[in-house]
Length: 121
Image 1 (cartoon, helix red, strand yellow):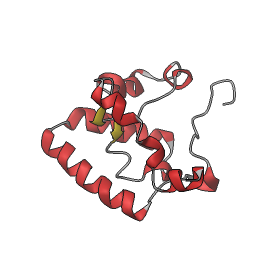
Image 2 (cartoon, rainbow, N blue to C red):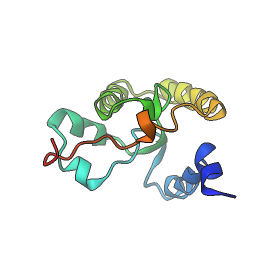
Image 3 (tube, one colour):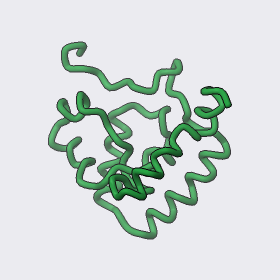
Image 4 (tube, rainbow, N blue to C red):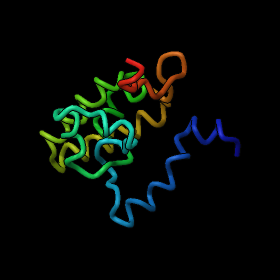
């Protein structure tokens, strides 16, 4: 299989299931983030870290990489504030549709990481 095929069908994220089995991640939750991003979070943005990271989440089913970082973080914090098993089931169900339609794989101009370093801003 080629890398583009794996990415197109989000199969490159399957190894994260091992992290779920080890208890390091959840099926549903804010997506994992990078240390350099966390170091620049505001107190509001840090709220997304109150839950284990997930393979899928509220921001993934509401735009995925077509959303700006600000929008993704706002949706992640909304999820933290409104967490429930019913919401998780809804996200898992919607994830199937997003996956089948291959929605939001890439952001504008193919850029997925629009997080701006402070020194760049």
